Image 1 (tube, rainbow, N blue to C red):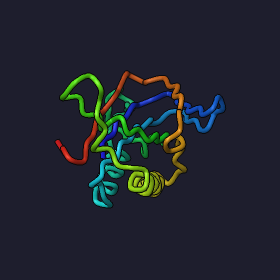
Image 2: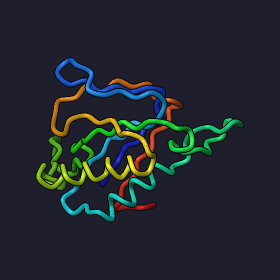
Image 3: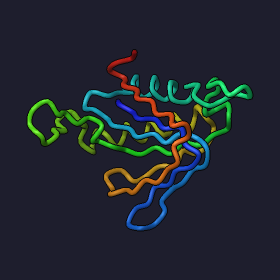
Length: 150
């Protein structure tokens, strides 16, 4: 599983011109799922995301998690995070999981996030053409990959 996590003041996802979901202060998570991702990846990544200390404390130091600030999460599926660009100019998505594999993992990930922060996780719609609006706070953008846990 690969994520791009953005600390935001707000984020909104629109589908077919209508607002599907929005959040205030919190995390906008773009998540890509590979064929061999599993429950271990879901559990490790959801814990890492929810405990990531990237929000400012009273001294202006990034020392607080989304849980500690009572923030919100907007989770957006994005298979293009697994683009392979080594050959030619057209990205290959051969490692991105097909919907029958990716959807259950994406849903488990969102449920695990809900369990971790004790709050509803807002989402887009898997496979839809989504328009995302956000105000990145910082900017702070973090990339996490369960296959490369550095």
